[in-house]
Length: 364
Image (cartoon, rainbow, N blue to C red; front, side):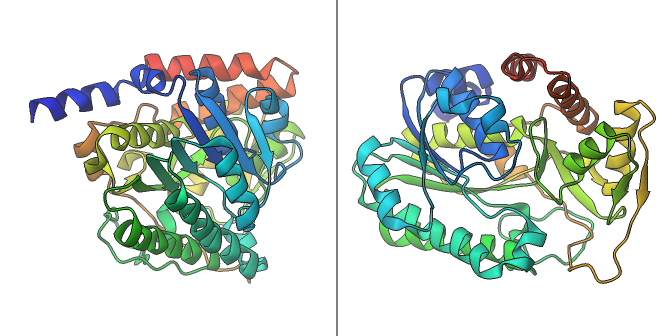
């Protein structure tokens, strides 16, 4: 017990977690996306040998391009649905650690393109795990899914990892399927082999997210043009957290199970209950922090596709296993998002802003 407690103390130390990755060969899928770009920035800054595998950046502008991430990673452009290309990337780079973020990540896009969503989120996971199964180098795998994998009953308490999986819409359901695929591969192929975990993260916010149909990017775009922010579902409540929160959890899990496979599991990754706020509250907080007369209004859609109205996570398992606690509450997360966005709009060096925010996160 003493040895495990000592390991937990080291893992919860974020600086020591980053130091662990120095010199490690890490493959990040989805590295051109918002979370993937932040993750690669963290890993490359820590001295890891980072290979990214993804489609071209999904937005224009994109954090990947703004931060010039191609200079910091071995960037391989490919489709996670193409098993042959992905297998070639594994064979060429022999990763020790795999962090799987590649996905079609938008609920409303899932309604528009359900087949693409399932192909990417389900068969993409199958392809990745098959490459890991056949690899002699992989020791630690983290598959990033979502808090929306649960059968949402709109209840007030947080979902636990043993709750029923389902997912109402194609995106949520495809991620639930990804969870089931991962568990099947663990049971069938990875006993005694690579350690595999899934991380079910809540809604993330932060500088550099330019996606459509996300509340904070919508807020930044409108505020930058001095337009009123339109909010589709002001009463919908979600677990919001700054992007650095789940990224450090992914690294902590990957590190923990690298040497001790007993850490492998399914983990909720979300904020404290006080940081589960409605979309209207989040927009109001953004307007207060942004200033310059920013304002929002409700623009409910009569025939909008179904999205859950209330969602909260119970993260007790993660806290007990790793001694983890979230660092930044919702106000700080929005402040950091506004700080980054204003710096980018003003033409300031983005790398310096990212390094400063990471340093502040490590020190808080």
